[in-house]
Amino acid sequence: MKHEAFLEKLIAILDRSAIAYRQYINEGKPFQLAQQLKLHNGNALQWLKENGSLLPIRFQGDIQSLITHYSEWSHKWEKLNAEKEFGPDEVFVFANDITFPKQAAQNLEAFYKEISQPPATLHGK
Image (cartoon, rainbow, N blue to C red; front, top):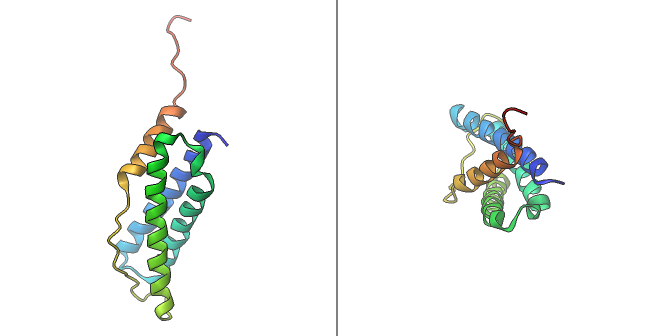
């Protein structure tokens, strides 16, 4: 798999996760939306673990930052979920001091834009 294909899918997953997160926040943090967020974050974690090593070494720190974030977030999500049975509209919130590594995601998105640009053409050809 080429870098571009890996990053294209990763960015799509991250975008879905961001949309789910905003919806979860805006609608009062209900369990049913927390489940959607968990699905997207789980997809991101799996994709990063399975394919993140394909990127150049200079991006491995960014990949690891995202993996660490999603792993710890998932662990906390699962721990709270195991404490009781939540109704779909019940508030589902846990303390999380590990914030999303925005710079890591931005670095990967910038690399994607760099490699997906069409080659420059010479005028007058």
